[in-house]
Image 1 (cartoon, rainbow over the protein chains, first blue to last red):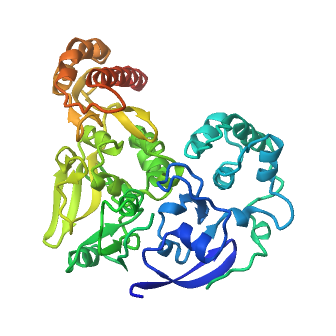
Image 2 (cartoon, rainbow over the protein chains, first blue to last red; image 1 turned 90 degrees about the horizontal axis):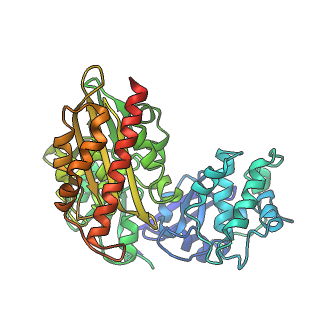
Image 3 (cartoon, rainbow over the protein chains, first blue to last red; image 1 turned 180 degrees about the vertical axis):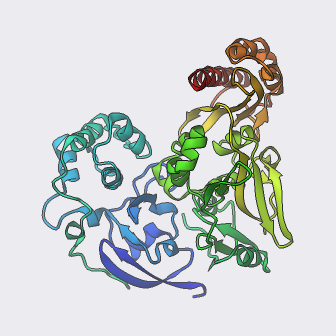
Length: 176
Length: 290
């Protein structure tokens, strides 16, 4: 195959090195080649936020990001913010407040909220709404999602969801 | 959907990027990809080579230069501009605009240069940059040239930029009066937007000149010449009434595309509402400044 690019990056704290065609999209690399299916593809046009991953901590739409762009960077997916046993404080808050219905948008919301709280641990109501405006829930459960995030904003952070310890996952990379 | 296969190159200088795009076959500059990759996935744009400009130093610089102009590197992301201390100090309305482009993911990687070069009529920055009297500096194989923001977008998704010209920097005079921007939107793109910038007479009681641009209605941002004319030399506190006196006629001259977001009359009305709110804000800002 022509135009194969060698990329190396950190995926949820683990080093990955692989060869990919230059036009590979990040979401396809993560879901289909590496096999982490937690990230969802929905609108495929950067509007819905279901495919949100963190690139060096910043939220991006993995459906419209070239995999070559993560070379040398750190990628965090929903698997990377989920503890091996149980749920993170953000996930627990979503459960507690009923912030999910069908659950399809939830991984994207969790990633967005992770990024929000990392840069702004105690966002105001307006800041929460502004930040999450680009994540869509087709069950329209926004009020409960908002309440979940609001409860987190009011908390003193006891556990850093993005800490190296929390990121260490025991999935196997199937780098075929 | 997948884009059709292409070569992927990285450039470390502007000259190398320009040369790589200009090689045989069709090449394109690439940075955030938030517009370009969408179009490539929909297969409405095909390119044989993408040349990544993110490794070129200096294109993400924001400075107030010695000529009292603001310079914004073309590949500054919206997030960067929104949080930049120089922009927040001198043009807070532009920082706020960039903090509200599309969504947080697009703002993380999407650049202001890419936004302009795409020529999307429903975009925020072109309207504001027209009001700010910006010039856009392009570098091609034969050197650099400046294009005024008003002249850059030719039509829908079409600009005067040649394929092998890279936009390197956006330059505009440091505003000396209130700058305001408002938009009305469905989804993530503005369906009407209005940018206005006043420069003030010494003493700051009268408007020396005003620039008003209305965007998203036609294929490119349009000036409201009658409003600009009536504001020139006017005491600040008369601005709102003066605008109202010429507004209906000025709005009638706008080129408006009717679409599912509204009729021409409806959109003209919205533009007028946004403009008057901008004016109120500008008057209030000037009241605080004096």
